[in-house]
Image (cartoon, rainbow, N blue to C red; front, side):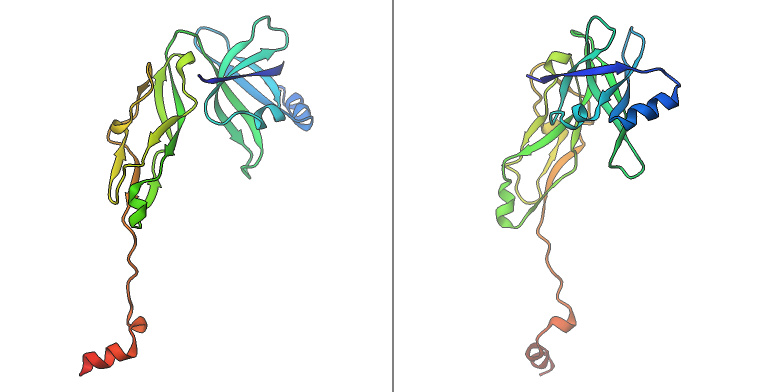
Length: 202
């Protein structure tokens, strides 16, 4: 079951830069909510709400001051400043229960590949995956068991079994993870023992 949290929000006046600047000083982040069949909404949430969000996918009951009912949303995007350490704007998508939508969810590798016993190195290529489902069936993450991967084995999207009611929208041939062969260090001339060089000359 996907996690569900509550955020309280203050409405925002679109196009008023001075207002945005003032709210940012107080620790608020501007946002926009968009979805099908309803006008976009704009507002501010407190930075701690964003910072304390759960890991993986989650639904947000967004209570905007002045609106009677909360908007049920998912977090679509976070924009950061030029240093990449401060969120300056977020995008939310309002969902409709019973209506399918495409969302990106994290991919988590579980288990220890057997190829690691022989010096192999596990490399994850796909960290998020696009799925299609109704809001109540959105998984927090997609877990992929890699314990059977041996050295040289490759796991593709087609090898993933999604939860019931969930369809994977990625290319089936997309590589999710691979166990690379151990690197063999090349021996240079300088590393060859002098004794070995003399024996070769003889």
